[in-house]
Amino acid sequence: MLNKEAKLNTKVFDTDVLLVPIRNGYGNGLVAAAENNKDIVVLCADLTESTRSHLFAAKFPERFFQMGVAEQNLAAVASGMGISGKIPFISSYAVFSPGRNWEQIRTTISYNDSNVKIVGSHAGISVGPDGATHQAVEDIATMRVMANMTVLVPCDANEAEKATEAAAKIWGPVYIRLAREATPVVTTKETRFNPGQAEIFWESRKPEVAIVACGTLVYNALVAAKELDKEGIGTIVVNNHTIKPMDEDTILRVARRTGAIVSVEEHQVAGGMGSAVAEILARRSPTPQEFVGMQGVFGESGEPGELLRKYGMDVKSIKRAVEKVMRRK
Amino acid sequence: MPLSEKKEKELEIAANKIRATIIETLLHAESGHSAGPLGMADVFSAFYFHILNHDPKNPEWEDRDRLILSNGHIVPVRYVTMAYAGYFPLKELRTLRKLNSRLQGHPHRGSLPGVETTSGPLGSGLAQACGMALSAKLDNKKHRIYCFMSDGEQDAGNTWEAVMFASKYKLSNLTALIDRNNIQIDGFTEDIMPLESLTEKYESFGWHVLEIDGHNFEQIVDAVTEAKAIHESPTVIIAHTIPGKGVSFMENRYEWHGKPPKKEEAEKALKELRALGEEIKSEHE
Image (cartoon, rainbow over all chains, first blue to last red; front, side, top):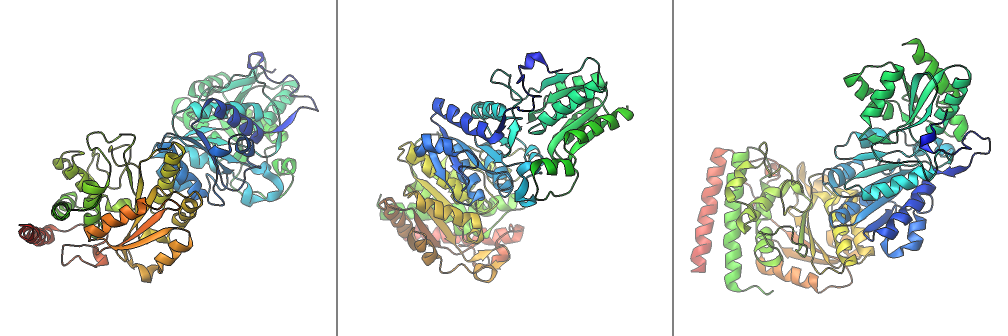
């Protein structure tokens, strides 16, 4: 059942669960953080409203900078500002930033230790009808591989708000991954969010598998866990929101307790969150693991639900992965 | 600050010493770029010993002028000039490109105070300088931002994104200087990817453009003075330089863009530079 201590949304399993785009949390968090910190500036590459930067732009126009369609410049100008004592948040779709400007982020932000927050919106396949050109399913890999980079993947709008405020307080480069679609609200204002600390959201009486999820798919993981529980299969669901630095202790604890892992992410299984989990387990406690995510292919146009189904990231796919990994124990 | 005849000679002598030390440093490092650093020695001498408002003993001083070196591969000239200016001991130059050195092959901000930013991958320095200039404006700071670029990196799209940005936000506290030496690794710039007319390009992007002889100290200093008087736009100084300047067999040879001298070549180069140094001094006397 839901972990009471996590203080989650009690209506999370209702059919009329509140749906809010994760990016909205970013917009609100940015305004909240900026009210307390005049060094925060926002740079956006011609996607102000859809990245929800417009809330900040309306309130703090003198600290908002429109860069045009120029993501390399977005990153490198922010680098110069970060070195000069500002805390720049740079916003675009994840395919463009950190997609197009990876080298500028590497050299001028990360290696340069410039205090820039990179916010990639519209990540994952659930971007939907725009098609594969706009579905960033590689960004966790390309950001987590970078030295000196923190990587946060909030699971809903509330958590995105907290992640944004937390990022402003972390010294150094941070990547925050956001999604476009209205996503079920899993957490509440009271749910704890500490970067680097994974949270147990679900725990059955006799857990046999740990489902480690991040981002939009935490909700699907919870629904799968509830259905499996009814079917007599106990699980633990971990909201693994910090990909880097990852909470090794929690990962090890649930792996040792259950002896089987299913990682769940809206991202390529190569190099993503699940890979990071496997890196920890291979080193410290080898454990059978199934990977739910994009299996090395590009997406396509379609409705988010249809795409998650076709590409194997819906509730049914998670359940199948749990059953599969149980057979490998 | 106008340039006295005495000061001009001092800068010329300093540039000659910088060139000789670049040769010695590259010989010891056994890798690195020769032509670019030699070509920019006069500009670096003028900036560090006359133009920049800086304090070598306090490299993090908040109100210092910022000098961004976008084309990080010519950093030997910066390191040598910084050493002569008193940022660190000259003998540390022998660590260039070696293990555990503060003098990385391409400059790294976290390694050496005074380096201002990390660079090497071309085309991103101007954008970083824009970020610094914008921040200075937001904070009502009076220091100036200088960004040195190569002509080769005018090929890069990011350069022109930054050119547009600087113009949009009227970054008049930003002065760019292009080392127009006409060479890049694979050959002459006009063969690789024609850049001309650079002046018209920058003018059409709303920049104030000055063209100078990058080996003429009076012109270097005058151009910077003029740039400070322009309040509506950023300024770019296109400095025509001779790559490999001061060493006859390196001058204007793109083959010397990306390699260091061997022992005999270094000896020959040093002999030429010493003779040149004597000539400058005797003229002075």
